[in-house]
Length: 231
Image 1 (spheres, rainbow, N blue to C red):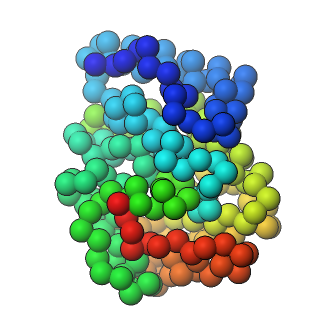
Image 2 (cartoon, rainbow, N blue to C red; image 1 turned 180 degrees about the vertical axis):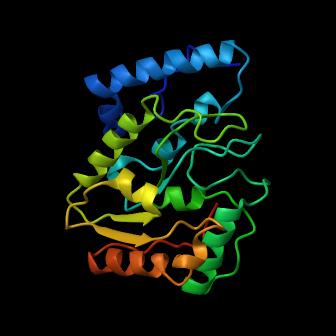
């Protein structure tokens, strides 16, 4: 069931707590919480589980963000969503878009194809795997779009953009680019079509986002991401 007493900010580091606790964002979160509780009490299945809604922020503190990969909304089938864009828990079948991401990863960095679709290994290294909408009704893609999550994730992204060190933003598809908005020049934006089966062949394959991101991070004095480490 929906744990209404759960503290959404529990486990978040100071940077994210400040972003989500600001007056404007906190008000929106209050409205979203009320909506989600009504959904749950009405017998509607909502993904991910309440404790995983902010998993991306818990695994990747604001002060450690080095790369941002924006997704649309959580997977809407049973057992898939766990709070990280494009990622599924260990043991779940790898979704089509993530299979294409892995195909480009192998071609780009020369690693073997990861066996797991769980991307927590990326998150622990500073890759913020953020969906623009953080919840969804079961079997109903985009069902929680326009309810207020976009205002929350916009505040999250603005906090990352304010970072002085260079951050890589991966804009995969027109929707991701709209969500990202204007990016300060000190950061890097890697633009390409979305990795879905409908568009990956239009320019995602061959875009080399992983080595491009690492070259930027290293040039700025940072460590590269080990993209082969997914969990």
